[in-house]
Image (tube, rainbow over all chains, first blue to last red; front, side):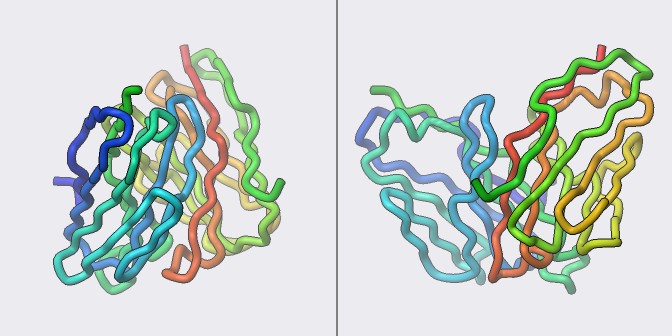
Length: 114
Length: 115
């Protein structure tokens, strides 16, 4: 079982819809990244958060450390939001991992149709 | 533009050939990483360098070697390429071990095919 699980694996939406992508993790973490990867493209870090909520434009990321869960929301989705969204956990040093080693989810493929 | 630069972007190798993937960052980051990305597997850490002068194995180091040439540059070498090494390779850097205060920056990737 992967230490970082994302759901759903695939998501298709109509332009304008509100999108939620979920990430659950089983290890103790110091922070969590949300990453975006367009088809055939590089990886861009959208957020890094260790508590609460962060907002950037139409993107909102939340994390609940006690429940070991994070969500990425996209408001008023647009076809240019179509990409793979990846969450990556930064483990606590005392959780058996190194804080140098991100643990990645397998990604959620989002397709937004016009 | 500031960031992580990887070369080459595409490469086709024959089984048994060797090659070096180059990575350079201009953000004065201490830590650098090499990942591979395969369908259905997500990103997996090959090697990392926590700081200049140190390198350590990640999750899938077999068949690879690395060199942290200086603070800016971190190269990945395939000594004898195998078809199983067909993948997309990403270099990344972070300020200090990915602590909560600092994020990661990724390169644009190298798409490697071994035939």
